[in-house]
Image (cartoon, rainbow over all chains, first blue to last red; front, top):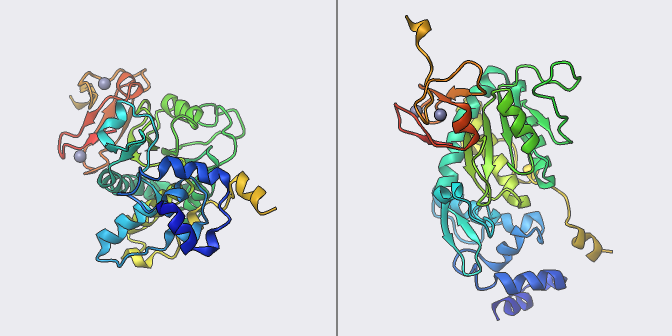
Length: 271
Length: 58
Ligand SMILES: [Zn+2]
Ligand SMILES: [Zn+2]
């Protein structure tokens, strides 16, 4: 088996436990054409951040580099569900029933969203609200807001914060709301609707477009995928604003945008 | 007369009523056209289209 071979080749990775072994069975055949198995495991957050970021193959050009980055972070990996709304962004279904997002659409939408958000950032970055209830989204959101001066909400969203001027947490003049997951962030999604504030959202294959004004098709559960989405979004907005003149000038790394949370079974492993 | 002109939904084409939870924003693609979405279209995730650049959202 390919996996076994790989294991013996990489002595440093011998600690893979039974939990991960089970995932292997499931994903082995599935991702042969798309991804290296090591990379696939990253999607399940079983790997260290650094490992997957290293692009193994020789980089041919910028587009190829970008594609490799997308693949290595699994931004295209959807779920086992496909909603009618997600059909427009979907590429194919794997043998194991996992839906894969069309990377060209992710790329296109990330750029459009950056163009869109840059206008709001320009008019007042503190009026741009970025939120994630998902734990792997908290760090990316915080970093994104630190870089662009936007307002991050990563703790519980207090109901009324967008709609009720008499509460302490009320945010006056919010201009746009960015969310990570329409399911998890549904309270703020609902308030943005009432307050008539446009909503930009990452959009996975199991999500619906209800209440969303601009969707960015992407894996919104994976640690690395979320890091990459916000990293690229922040970098592209800086470009749009003319604060940097090339991607290389962006003074932050993908790692800074990626959650440092270690999955529970990994913590147990190291005990 | 422009004050009498009602904004129309970029999805269904119906005029937007002042009381509904509609939303408007610049077209994400070209930025030149104001997209309006009526409460119903927005709530149901209906497609809107920019008249200038033909961008389709959400
Ligand atoms: Zn409508
Ligand atoms: Zn347009």
